[in-house]
Length: 89
Image 1: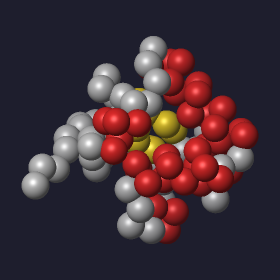
Image 2 (image 1 turned 45 degrees about the vertical axis):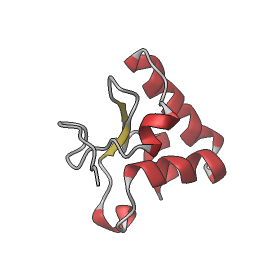
Image 3 (image 1 turned 90 degrees about the vertical axis):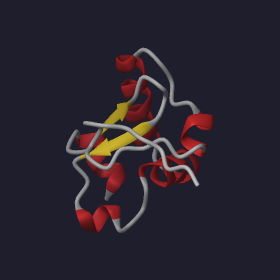
Image 4 (image 1 turned 45 degrees about the horizontal axis):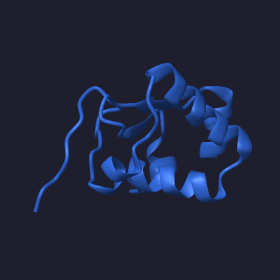
């Protein structure tokens, strides 16, 4: 479902200035409690080549790649990339 949404443009990939990633346009069913960081890791490990190309296009548009360290540190968005933050603790 998510791969299809990425390839047909219904789901947009957004890369932050810091290199974090967010997926805008996911339904609650598609999200199923999964964070954008986990979704990214899953797509990179098992996603279709077209889904990976959608991520690469978003990186090119942003002028930066997804920073795996930033993703691992928990930088994320709850609102489709309108704002970004991390949780400490």
